Length: 414
Image 1 (spheres, rainbow, N blue to C red):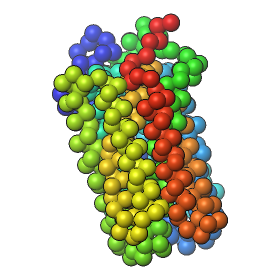
Image 2: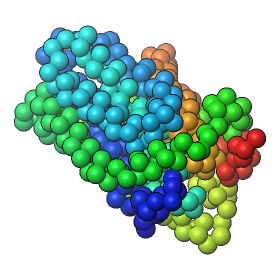
Image 3: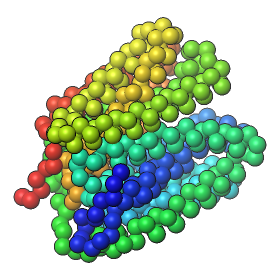
């Protein structure tokens, strides 16, 4: 990725490939830190004497704060700029991660999970604002694909390395060490973006952002938000229930389950990088953002429908093939969720837009695990859980391709 001159002012501060890489690293850290609790849950549960219900509350507490926190982060981006907002957010979630390693009670863990959700809510509104502000529309594919790679590799790396660390040193060191490593990100970030942040201060004084009510009045925002919810639903469904499904239903060993789960994440990251660069090349050759984005996001949702139905209706081999194929859909769809929002919103509104879109989109992190659990308890199997996921993916396909008339920058001048 080439260096791009900052559009924030006439100064020579540059938004370089290194800054984009740091954004991707921040999102990678974001997903590693949020997944640590699941990795350490068996040991935490035993040492602190927690019930299954309490573990479930700890997992969900993150999303109860993370979801509305998107709107707070979007507001903060408009007030103090995206560079500082992301730095503050990362400092908060790093501290929450570190102090989790010192927690002695359920109440303390609950407070720290809520604090983690608050800090991590800064990630996507801030990063999307910066990409939309400094990169042309035709370059958003590869930049968001790099960030999407962090989304996919974060859980895989956190589970693998966190599991090894827990096995040798216990769960407390996992949180303390990861918290310290996370906060070290601030050093290169502050160094690389100090001039860019100063430019933003000067630009904000002369540039008006559209009001939130103007965004909420747009059909495209609601279509993108519901589409985001649909894409996230299948992802959170798989993330929450894949281990149990593979072990209890398909008869996998714990090791085989971990290997397959990790492979899905790695393949998703690889497909995301490839697809992001293909999208940028296609647009560089003259394809419109509307054709490019809708082709990729539409294909991603169609693949998700097929994969969920393969798992619901097929035998063991068909179901596993469906899970592996789902990595293609996640790779094609993940980076486009944000590229579409950034394109529609434009540089001035991207922070607020993604704040709302990601807020609604991540409600699925609360809904999908609960709905799946209820369906399995009522029916005694996973079939209808996969069918529901397929239906929601179909809703997403409609929202992205029909609900949004054209994927192109909206006019906020009026």
